[in-house]
Image (cartoon, rainbow, N blue to C red; front, top):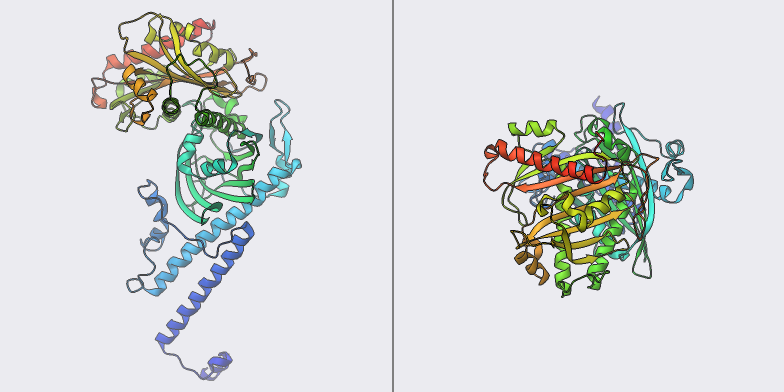
Length: 601
């Protein structure tokens, strides 16, 4: 047997005897060489993606991130509780074999991410340029993916199981009033996404950055967590762990791809999420006039039928809630706001002599933008406290959450959030025009107590007269002459938002003077209005005025009320609950009566 073993040895090692330590050293050298080969292979993958870097750094999660434990230390948990964020240079403290295991684990996951993105870019590019992969929905002319042609080209397994799992697909094209470089920079900055898409994205954070070139966004690869929610608490929110990748094609063109990534390496059947993003993203082309041409593609698999209320299903299932058109319309509205801020004067001239400096206008616009973000974020109602007195409201269709406000820019203490969503037999444009008309406000707003209001100043932005920031006051002086109402209204072809909040003259003067408005405490209430999504009633808003078009709409009424005398949830008494129910119910009844639909159940 000994002689036979000698014959099996390779020629250079024949008749050479190695000690146990020497064999171990040789194995370590081979492993390190294998790791270097993995690096070279990774470079080839990067080269295919157009990333001209020789080594891609792996950065730890952002400090303070609530997802640190779930993501950054996940690999460490799999191999004995050691984190990959440990300094790999400290070899004297960690055995070399364990170092190799750590490196191999890290390199393996990075390689998997790169391969995922390479495939996603290939698929997204095909969706952008291949017409046979799309068909027009015969009911409203929207573009949706031709499922048979798509599955022949990109066969894949279903990420979500169950009889209710379904696909949503959409494509939209348009012009955004923003330079391509600025737009790409904001799209690739997760902290700015809730500002760029305040009506869609409620939370976003970068968990891990894997590849960037110095001074360039081209080649940037990020693992991002994002939470989305629209319209109403009756619509299920969506959460994604996505890889975001940006590639600059030439001096004026970029492509950004977003694709879900299972960073937990678990089966999606046991995942708490009910949505999976297939290769999606946008193509950005910089135009000479300072605008950008955008093509946006959304493709997701969802399983939220049981989580979405029946009155919202048409709107959600027809890709109007989270589809490409909504993302693009949000970009266009924000582009119009940014353009208004940069110019330094309002599109409309109805300023009443109140806004006198550019910084003051910008401060007011930042304040109302925060109001829109706060109103839309409140729809998730995740910070709900269990209070026995609330069961009566929930049974009446009014949803209530109570949370303790500790952050800057909101009144301190307990805040009661009450919402109700309902269907109205009128187009959303008609409902929007009624609710934003200051001359008709007394018909539903209890703050004015039957007294008509007047607009004393406004800032108009964009092409639609409904996109406006207004300062309102009672037409006839009331008890509290120190209080005004700050309101922003905006409308697009999918729906509208009206958010308003009481504000003191002192705080308003502070903002108008150009001071930082982020410290001004403000608590918005308002309305989210949309079409009902029925294929026979969908309509578009005119660029100059709203057109009465037959159809129904969905209205969500939101009230946020500070509790002055309650310091804990146990002190929320039955009188407060009754007053909230009365406020919401009376507002709904007043709107129904004013719109002549009080007979509708």
